[in-house]
Structures are given as structure tokens and as C-alpha cells.
Amino acid sequence: MDGAGIPDAVIEGNAAATWVATRDAVAVRATKDLDVLLRRNDIERVEGVLAPLGFISADVKAPPVFMEASDPLPNQGIHVIVSNEKVRAHSHFAAPDVQAALRSRSGDMVVELLPLVIMKLNAFRRHDQVYLEDLFRVGLIDAKLAAQVPSVLLGRLRHVRDTMEWFTEPPKF
Image (cartoon, rainbow, N blue to C red):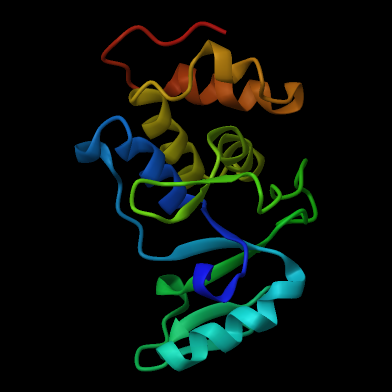
């Protein structure tokens, strides 16, 4: 997207993996799909960028999923998360702004750590909790970061901390 001037950021599982890799590359958890944070008004432009690369858009759910035309599997596609909009109606918070990102060592734009943690706590599915455990294990979630988590989500963060297996002393917050 960089070449087309479209602001984007890797979010969800691949963002968690990128953050974990900053501390322990061996601890990175693989994921089959790619979640990308985009502004709603850029989705059509993204479709134009991805089509020549062999991707098709599918309205599996709104917003779209981009899949390889030769092997169109939604669970291995590029899933769009719309910046500043709730992913689900019952979510406490909207997805972060696409500008809440920084460039990773690999050159990709990746959502910043705090907005990523809030997204994972907001969704709080089992696989979100597992990614949070990974972030805890490598020391990325600590008392300082926990102090910035909205109070409505802090109980969820404590639940993950208190129910995971620890090999060191867990952070206090």
C-alpha cells in the first residue's frame, strides 16, 4: 500500500507476532491470514492495487476479504479492519486510527502496542487471549502498559495474566 500512498497498518495476529519478534523471534506464533487496518474510503483503492497482484475481493463479510484468485480461501486472505469503526456492534471501542502505527524492522507499518492490546481485549476470543499471553511472556505487557488500558478492559487483562502459565513472576497491576 505504501507505493500507492494508501495508509495501512498490520493489525491482529500478525501485529502481535511482529511485536513478539522484537523480544523473542522463536516465540512468534504463525497465522494463516493477514488483518490490515484501512480507512473505509481507501478500500476501493486497495482493491485496485491488489487486483493486478492476483487478488479478488469477496464480500464474505463486510468489510471485504481479499483472496488469491488461484486459491480463494477466506481464512488465508487479507481481512480488512476499518480504522475508527467498531469491528462488532457489541465492542467497547472502535478499531484504532490507521495513523496509530509504526514501521517494523521488516518495513511494514504495524499498529502500535497499546492499540493492539486494546483490540485484543475488546474482541477477547480465545485466540485473542493466546496472543495476549504471548505479549505477556516476552515482557511487552507490564504494569506501565496495563496502567494505560481502559478500566472497562482491565479485568480482561488481569484474567489473561491470572490464568496463563508463568515461568517467571507475572507483572503486578
